[in-house]
Length: 203
Image (cartoon, rainbow, N blue to C red; front, side, top):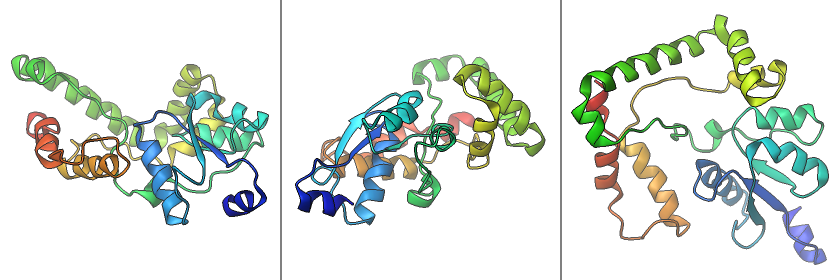
C-alpha cells in the first residue's frame, strides 16, 4: 500500500504514536523498517493521545497507530481496524512503563523507598494472577472509560513482572534513539544506563 500510494502520487499513510520519544515510536519504526518502509520518508508519523486513536481511525485522520492496550482492542471493537503486531514480536523484552524515583530521595529515605518497591511488587503479583484479571479489568474500566470486555483481552499480552530493568535494556533503547537522531551519536549509553537503572537499590 505504501509503494502503491507513492506510485499513484497519493499522500503517504499517516500513522500515529503516543509521543515522539515513546517506546511506541521505536516499535513502529522497527516494524516499518522490517517491511522495507523508511519511516521518515515513506509515511507520515504524527502524535495523538492513545484514547483518541480509534476515533482518529474512524474519521480517516490516521490509517494506523502504535499504542499500548487497550487501545488496539478498542479500535477492533469499534470496527476501525485490527491489531497486526504485538510489541513482544517486534522488540522482545523492551522496557515500557517505568516507575522512576529521584536517586537522592531513594538513597536518603531507603526505608520508605523499600516500602514502595514492596507494594509495587505485591500489586504486580496480584495483577499477574489469572484469577484476578476480571477484577483488574473492572478497575481499569473505571479509569480508562472503556468497557471491561475491551480491556480484558489485552491483559493477556502484558508482562506484569516488577523486576528492576537491566542496564542492557536501556542501552538497547538508547541505540534506537541514536539511530533516529533522538539522542547524540556520541552518548555513552552504557554509562547512562548504569547510572539510571539501579537494580541494586531494589534488592
